[in-house]
Figure 1: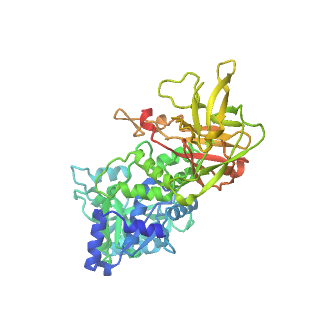
Figure 2: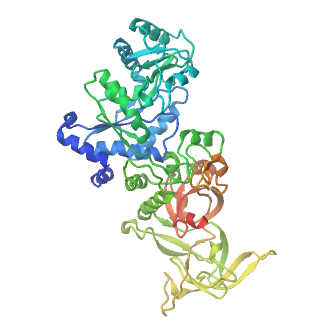
Figure 3: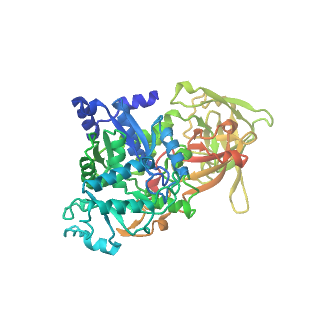
Length: 563
């Protein structure tokens, strides 16, 4: 938690933090701060949720307050414990601890029902049996006011009776609803007698078949905040138009403690989708391998890909909190990942597209230890031994028979430096019937151990390598962006099926050869394959019988070049 405290101390000042600071200073709510993060457990959290999560928990930490983790389980058709458990895991992985403050909206159902009854008694709610078609006619639109429902003037006694019978299950689904009685002529459509309860016979994953009526989110949300003593209810901008009802409900019920709802812009990221409906479609239709597929923008997908939690928090901090909608470039997230891993990830040698090299003037049997630095950015990271020998692998891209001008890697008659090793020179090469290089024959200069020459000879190229006799074979999954379109679902300004814009090259699997030390890494470990990128040990390693690595991110942004 020390890292979290340091991050909080350096937290940027934004308009929400300024509001909270001013209210704390003025002694509002007794100077206390209580926030909440209220996800609906109908899917896995994604990078967009991380913005709200970091804001809710971050402000609580910064002002010595508390943040509740509340599962908004008011829609029984899509919710389950799988999502609940994943949400809790993601929140904790990001570095926030709700401690014992994990709540469920469904545990307040009885209290919410009592609040609805109280509204009826005060003449502020009524049971309405308009059909959907009639509802559309009576509601009006943005330019025309609505009309009062014929049921609006039912007596308190009749409304109480009907609402009780709704709860008892005497009516069919959709036969009637409970509505607030506000103003059908309001310019804000959300204030035109909004629905508070609907009949829905669905099995609730926590309460079974106890309820056949369920509260609407706009009704449940302010009550949950009030029940929990929330001081600042932070929501994304689409809830701004719902704030008048939020305030109306708590004022009408005379709640002495009234949270303040404040809205901010949501996180929009290009080259991905963050609609839960679309993410669920990707999972259900097997376009990806589950919610934690490393190509998904989910927190679990990012974690499996090897993205550090600190990189996500730093990315969110850099995006900032505003009232203006915009689109954040995926490059910003990728750069945040690189910055974090550059400082923390140990370096190793790996060859993902191997071509054999034989050092023809090196002895057949000895294996010579060479010293390699684990992370030049971290003096405390130490060093390790590499096994040098006669037979090596280098990357196929590091050798060309007829290199272009400016190519400083290995070629016939040219000399390069092996990382942490010796200077080698290509003496000859072998090819197959199709002209593909099958082996490169080189000589080495034994006076250049460690990568420098005593005679002052300089070489411009340094390439990585592994010992062919000691290297381990591994499955390497080269992940890329899931979509080819910057804004999936749009093409030339027109709506299209977002699935048609899936990137066919979003993952490629190759066999790589790695230095043996990589075989001892635990699942989730993240390292840099020198000159290649950052890679994480995938959980599939445990069942594959060999190491499986996911590419977290490349060393440099190559996407703009593709475009």
